[in-house]
Length: 254
Image (cartoon, rainbow, N blue to C red; front, side):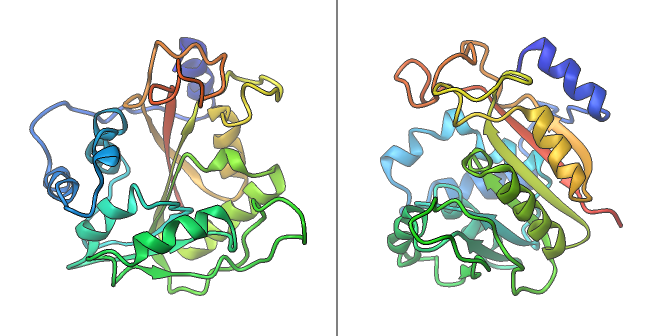
């Protein structure tokens, strides 16, 4: 992130980096093992260095005995890592609007070895006929969970839909439960244009999630990419795979 963005975030809530750079933690070692799974494709492995899943999940304070909901897993890039980590002592749920290309993309992933214990939760709401597939969630029919995670999805939704998703996440979590969000960085207070529609202002994300009742816990610079000028669409060849992203962690109050 740019210094101005960091300053703006610091004005919203206290910041603690919490990244030591020391030997891998127990959680990181479990993630590294899951990353070697044969169900992962070469294309997925090629993104490991950029996405740093072991470090990101450690930042989110994931533990192998947690109950976790992953929002909009699409083809399951993170699901294929989370499922093995949580298989023995925890539980992984996924949820997405259906029918959408997200739900279609997950069909093949759900049939892979090791995915048998991953359970799908109904999104809880239906979109308007002929309207956007990125519609608001409803209540999720699940016992209270320890963590909700979403990766590069928050930008897909309107304000109303984002607030509904934040509320669904809040209601699904146990007191003290954690909510982790990764997305592409937009310049602070920049209005919408054709180049930034898949980016989010991290300060706005913090504000919205706090409005749903969450407490802001931390952010991480793990996915900061100084070469990304925050000017161009994240799918451009000069940006894709190297977009500046934020990782934000929130908690439901005890």
